[in-house]
Image 1 (cartoon, rainbow, N blue to C red):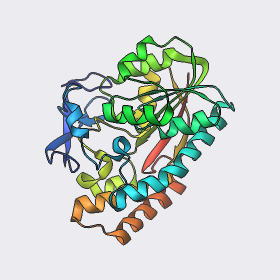
Image 2 (cartoon, rainbow, N blue to C red):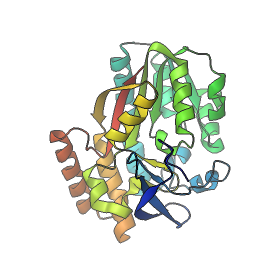
Image 3 (spheres, rainbow, N blue to C red):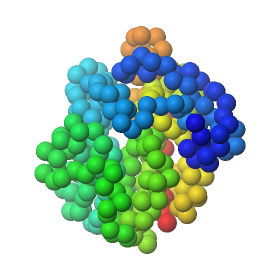
Image 4 (tube, rainbow, N blue to C red):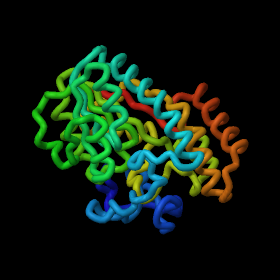
Length: 291
């Protein structure tokens, strides 16, 4: 196996992480000895990864409202999609435009943007989530392999909300994203941050490792390096404050077997406090990227 960023063939093992969501299998997270990028060793190939998403616990694909985690997720998502719309309008400096949500899940963000007057397109690999998104948006949701068929320089904004960590072909995907963006187009990427306090605190129990669904494990430095390889520039780095609490709550369950609310909230609070004074260490980060 080669590093998915620099193609170097040597790497060091960092952590053994369990798939707590579906299979209970163990996977190794490794670090490239050349560029320092961390990734999941020997993940399932694209034609086999689908079964690792088949769980009610994977709520971005199911919209499940069962249990405390799903309830919290649904409550936060209502506010989150509004915040994402405002962010896109602010950084694109547009009230309306054309937007592609790559990895749109069940379509909540697409609905928010469409309601605000944007012309939207969605791409989603999971058939179940794609069907739900089509019903919700009343439009066709494409499979990601249709990305090369989109017209060059045709999109104002591409969003990838917690998606890039799932993408098998990093370079091919980013090359196509750059191609379809207009000259002053905006790429918004949100991913978990392995440099966060909660990542360090929970180690192999950190829920945002989410192996084997998460193939790549990013830091601000690795995202910046990857984007530079494609002639893209990270212009802004923004925090996702809610993620520290949600991820910590789930991590407590993985670590102890119990929903320990107080320790989770405390860990999430410390993580966010550190991020207030040290940009780039929030549990999840949003990257504002331009051509």
